[in-house]
Image 1 (cartoon, one colour):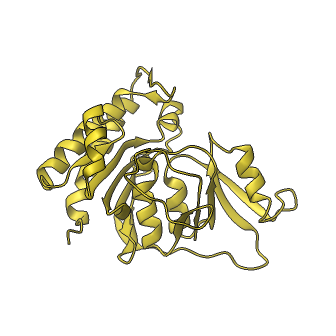
Image 2 (tube, rainbow, N blue to C red):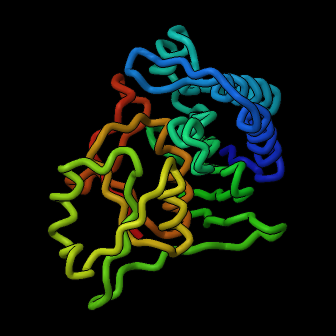
Image 3 (cartoon, rainbow, N blue to C red):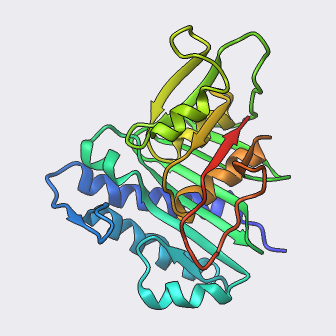
Length: 256
C-alpha cells in the first residue's frame, strides 16, 4: 500500500508556497466564485504547481484540487484513492495579509484521509502525518514528533475557532464545555487548517466547526491531527466521509 514520503511531498508544498508568496508580496487582483469566496492568482498558481508535481511523482493517483474543473469533479466519484488538495486554504487570510493560510495536500483512500501535509508559507512551518503513522512538525530547520494534549479536569478548555466563521451555533455548542466570561474557555481565533495543527502539537484541545467547509479544507489537517493522537468526527461521533457526492462537510468537532 502506497504511503507518501515526506522527502518527495515536502518540496511540492514548498514550491506551491513560493508561488503563493510571489503573489503575496505585490498588489494582486481578487475574483469571486459563485459562492462569493475569493480567488486570486496565488490560488491558481499553487494549484498548477501541485497538480503538475503530483502527476509526475504518482501518475497512477489522480488529483482533486479546490481549483479543479467540472470534468475532474465528475470523475472523482469513481476514485478509491486520490490526492485531495487545497492549494491555498484561507484565501480570506491571504487577502487580509495576516499570514494564516496554508497549502494542504492529503492522500484519501476508501473515503478517509490516510496521510496529510499542511504547510504555512509565511510561518515557514510544515506539519505532516497520518492515523497510525505518527505526526511531525518541521520548523526552524528541525523535524520533531508532535502529540496532542487532552484536556485536564479543572483547567480551562483551550478552543481554536475560525476568525471568519465563529457562528452562533458554535458559541451555543461551546456553552456545554463552560462559560467564557468565567474563564472556563480560552478561545484563540485562527485561520485555515492551522486550527487542527495547533491541536495536533498540543496548543489547544477543541475545534468545533458548526459552519460550512469542504473536504479539501479538512483532509490534510485531519490526517495530521489523527496522526498526533486526536480525532475529527461529526457531531454525532461518526467519522467524516470523503469523496461524497456533495463535497461539503457536515458540522464536525476536532479534539485532542
